[in-house]
Image (cartoon, rainbow, N blue to C red; front, side, top):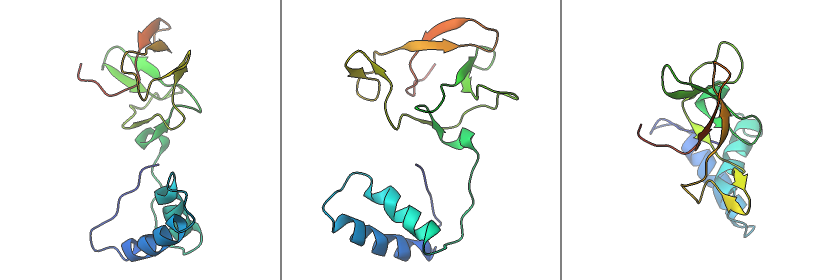
Length: 125
């Protein structure tokens, strides 16, 4: 999950209060996301939901690769370029997680139907 706020947004205070509550339960992992979800769905702060290409969750559906622009794209038409790749649940190969191991590459389909080995991690081409 990605979220951003203007520096003077009233949501910051609401999010901080919710974060204090979530952290008080002793489970740190996911607290930030839970706090923003409470702010959005319970406290009804104003939000703008961005399209999936702004935060592509790889555990649901792998992207495709566009050789012409050297970028990952959505796997369905019109194959929009993906801005942020989110390895939320990891991409596992054997007992190794791509989030922790930069050497892991998986089979990815290209737009012209080829299969290539790629990492979903950020890299400079």
